[in-house]
Length: 367
Image (cartoon, rainbow, N blue to C red; front, side, top):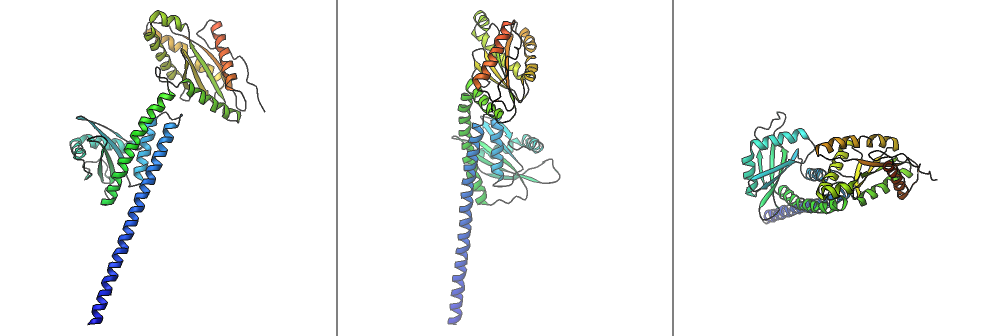
């Protein structure tokens, strides 16, 4: 009997030790998962900062949405993610994924079942429900709604479209919510930083790049050109008789003319063309990969387009244009290139304005 009692006591102690070991393993996995989430968040923040400081990035918001989607997808498998923001009684929403078909289907279901989504979002609780009527016969889906507190109220929710078989336990959902809350606040901080960065790069009046940004891009492109990369053409665009127009019609009208000019240039120029305000009524246009002749053909379209637009505004607006280029393998300083473009611009003005100036000089090839 004593031997039996001893055996049972040993078995009980062994079982208890095994449970403690298993619990320790679970705690270790949870700690490791929390660590991985922190690493994922740090990686997300680093990538956000990279997107913000990338001067070539023209759609910062879309890039940040893509990073958010990818980060969530590394925690659980998601088909689509929708951001739902409530402003008073109105809801604004957008999908973050790049699958346009799934995004449209998700929005269609959301519009049909909006009252339920809004009710779940206002509850402040993480909610998981089957999606009724999702127009896809191959697979059944659920949505996981994760409210996020951004101010005093729950006014921001993430809707995750997930497959029916997606496994989720309490710890995973809690960890997901923690990550989402931190990532949302990091995104909001990044958007504030982007506004500051945008103000430092762009002209307040016209919305095109400012002089500092353009000079930075010219310097980078000239370095690439000298190292055997693609060539570069640039153009100075100067509004004809702008002072007379500004004094006669008023500064507000002058500002409208500058905005109109930028709008027309964006319509006329190819996608790769970059426009910046160089100062006052003078603009700089970059044509990566083009030479003087190709840039000249494009800029010849500008004055006719301005004539049509000016007629609608009941004014006469024209520009004089000077162009210079740097061919692949050539070494030329920014000052030298700008001087060539200036000389071409002055030649255009001397010839009667409203035209493209001639090619003044050829850049010297360095060794």
